[in-house]
Image (cartoon, rainbow over all chains, first blue to last red; front, side, top):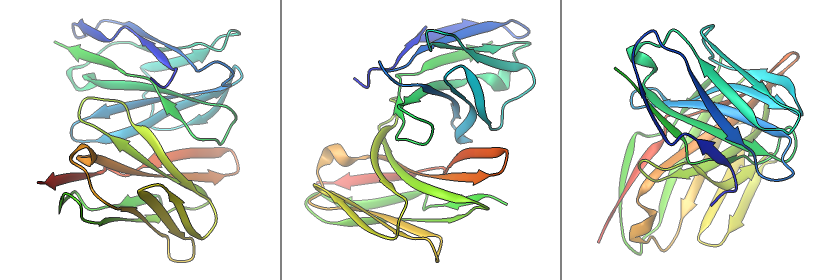
Length: 112
Length: 112
């Protein structure tokens, strides 16, 4: 158990819908990262927040957005969902900006 | 550009030693990570190298050569539970752009 929690564990929805994935970092960690992992693409870095501020941006689509709240939990919002958005979404946290990341168990999203 | 290469699959025998290589091309290197990921589970941190040389941690060691853009993960005394994917990840830091890039992973099969 890494100490990072993610909810929900599984999510099934339809194309065009919007979902919100939630992540609580390890106690004391200020950085939160979001990743998407699909079978053919491997692990793709989406976005990082550090102490409430956006810190780095990767291959995140405009239909996706994220934020980190004052209590340091983070949410990833996925809208206008497409079949290709079906993937495992991981959240990770680290103590500081460039430290080792600890991954949550992931949310498995299936878009039908 | 940014690129990380590692072999797609490798096979080794229980009790043996295996070396998983990773080569990378980045604009602003600032550290290399190795993660282990069992199928359907979250990645777990194995090692972090930012300076050249070998870092040893139990049965696992990681080596980095920044001038060659090369790293390897060495696994000794292989156990069946070591069957997993091993992900090489590089932190690429530029002014106003700070990303973590993952390779597609090396799937390691351990034979009895």
